[in-house]
Amino acid sequence: MNLVSSFRVTAGIAYQKMALSSSASEKYDFVRKSRKILGAALNYMDIVRSRNVAVPAEPLLFLKPTSSYITEGNPIVIPKVFTKVAHEVELGVIIGKQCKNVKKEEAFNYISGYCLALDMTAQCNLALARQNGHPWSLGKGFDTSTPVSGFISTNDIKDPHKVSLWLKVNGQLRQQGNTEDLIFKVDDLIAYSSKYMTLEPNDLILTGTPDGALPVKAGDVIEAGIGDNLRIVFEVKDEV
View 1 (tube, rainbow, N blue to C red):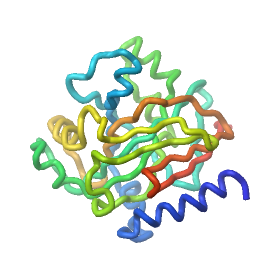
View 2 (cartoon, helix red, strand yellow):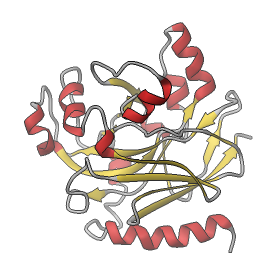
View 3 (tube, one colour):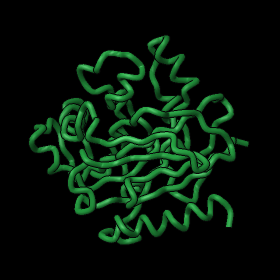
View 4 (spheres, one colour):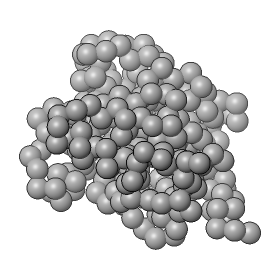
């Protein structure tokens, strides 16, 4: 059994612990039906400290196309045009009902569930975009840049602000954090983003990543998880 196969066996066992409340057919419904993906940048205190930048006064949001989704069994493909693509492990929030101008205290009424996600990021492109004040679309939205787990019920994550996240590459720990360190909490992100756009059922909000995002290369195996309860595994390949 190779490295990827052995990870997938344990991942399947771990996923069953957390996702018993959703059937196999429902597991990836949100991926098929999603209209948009919103991401939050600089949303963990450890990143702000490590980069020695000011704490954002309001959420820094960007959009990703739904064509960037992949699920387990499909590889992350690094486009030929990029030289430096990094992993970012995140808790994803799945919207359950259409909403606009949501009050913060009512935000949890619009959540159907969660997922574990990777926000693969072309750091080579984003560095230039930030420097020149350009959009982040290309560096964030390329094909295969949003690997996700299946749907996780709100019964399985009762408090999204106490979720332990980790990520390994080839068995070596790269990222470790907890959503209790989010600068803007889940309800903040829903309330803020819904002031500007309608959130629709199955839309995904990526809540941000802890410090430690580093580049990957073809042949690497990325394993990420929520505590001991869920694991996802993706192999990295180059575009051919």
